[in-house]
Image (cartoon, rainbow, N blue to C red; front, top):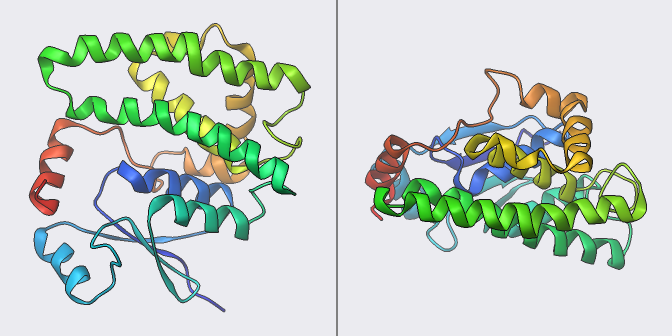
Length: 222
């Protein structure tokens, strides 16, 4: 029997958090080897474990998986969270690309200089209320089903709900006008595997802080 996946990353969300969410939603237990200092990172590179000298890296099924999208694609395919045919997979990919656009805008908030934070937040609010949330609300309304694609749980639902939590962390009022998204969030959050991941003490990481950014800078020298 194969061992648990092992996740190599620093102790923060970054590009590993969506991988944590997807594994958790699939009911897959995983271990984390946290990169705490530059020496930890150099060791991984010197041992030839990082194809492009970058993390995240996931040890899984006898492989060293790198590049976050490739890792997510593999996990979703393995655990039947990637649609039943090419058309469903296309829709899932389209939705995820939109999700990631907004997710990255929010992720970059922690890197934004203080004098630019208000402008950045105004843009996030505008894009959330007038572009991304209306688009996903329309998808759910168009077919009246419980999930985004094929009336079956997919990685698109999981990534969208992860995004909804992130949005609520920066402005809880933004979800108020979108009842179908609220219902999706409740539905996915109550799935046993996701519910467990959302509990205090799980491997889910807290919102990124300036201190976390500074620690990451020291480790990865960016």
